[in-house]
Image (tube, rainbow, N blue to C red; front, side, top):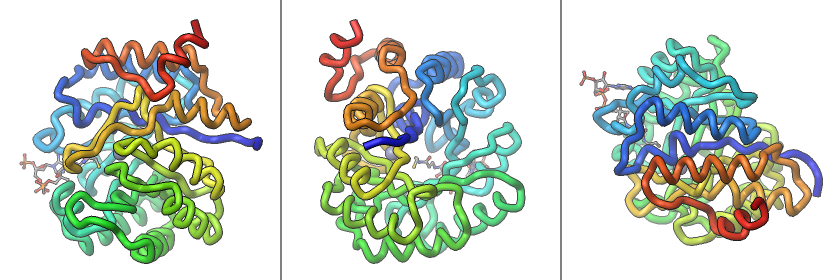
Length: 298
Ligand code: COA
Ligand code: ZN
């Protein structure tokens, strides 16, 4: 197995957005600097959301204005057109929009129904194309929804087709509550890779049921080469009850590199960033191989 696997580090957004401990802008900038030093190619810096809905992400505009110099490409999450405009004003040129495959998840997350959400996504995609802004569309709860249960594969494939007509820079299949299994991932991603090729597809997995890494492996086998991951496995969505953290960046790096793929990420520096994150959050963070990886790097 050779070739590159591109990892987007999402600890500073997905990782922090549901933490009971709210980090200051200065702390979040320090964390981004540490993550940037790992060589990770992409970094999500926060989200332009209502501070009433997610106070943990307040001040993302200040973060955008003071970003550390790293080699990473920066992006931020936006929930609606207002967020799109705020992010553009803050100088961000790559936006993540998270829309859900189900009615109830959209209502709980962004207070819009399914139709309204997809129309909004299309409007943002078309405007972004005209304004030269890259959009990464996340199709959330693509396997199972905390409110509606199992999500049909055919529904997701049709939703992807609709979104692809508006030319997103990337479309990510997101297992927001960590309920997918490798067979379902392989089936869905193989069909999508066959239709659209690997360049514009990605996956976003949570590790609630300990199948995060197995799902990454299944997606890799299907040809996916772009993954989100969170340092230390931190993460969760405040509007998706029961969701645990993202698959840990250090575990994904270990999996990929041991199979012969290159991630460009420096493991000792990544573990330093996890240590910093643990100190800031006030509890030890780390992926499944944390102890072993720490010994290897000592
Ligand atoms: N950023 C900051 N403020 C925003 C905003 C944004 N993107 N979008 C709306 N607002 C503000 C409005 O200006 C308004 O402010 P006011 O009360 O001072 O007038 C207030 O929020 C309500 O606006 P409205 O359009 O009615 O929004 P809403 O109450 O229906 O909430 C969202 C919709 C999307 C703003 C809110 O649900 C949200 O931010 N959700 C976060 C989703 C998320 O990030 N989930 C986790 C990741 S998947
Ligand atoms: Zn997530």
